[in-house]
Image 1 (spheres, rainbow, N blue to C red):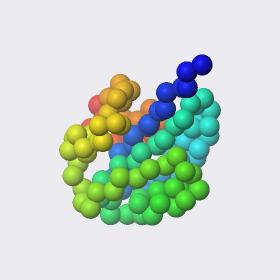
Image 2 (cartoon, one colour):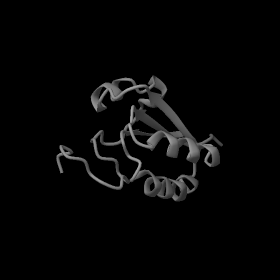
Image 3 (cartoon, one colour):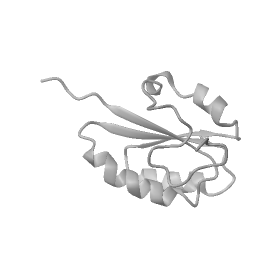
Image 4 (cartoon, one colour):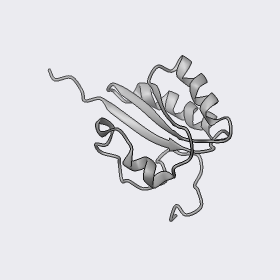
Length: 110
């Protein structure tokens, strides 16, 4: 029997300190139910708040969390082009708003 394909969820974040606890709680419930190996890669785009600290603390207890941290904010379009090739497969519907994200941002188109 073939092993299930692994899944990587890529989530760009910038100054999301207020939203991350809810998102991580949701992911903590979702990931074990995926039925396949699953990782969540947060792309930390140079946040100026406590975003990275929250992610680092979550990574200590949730081994499926990965963090790619940029030294400064490069913006979402630049960030998307820098997603590692192995993580670039199917990015869902490729909209800017995440499927389970806790809030919408201005300019999301909906």
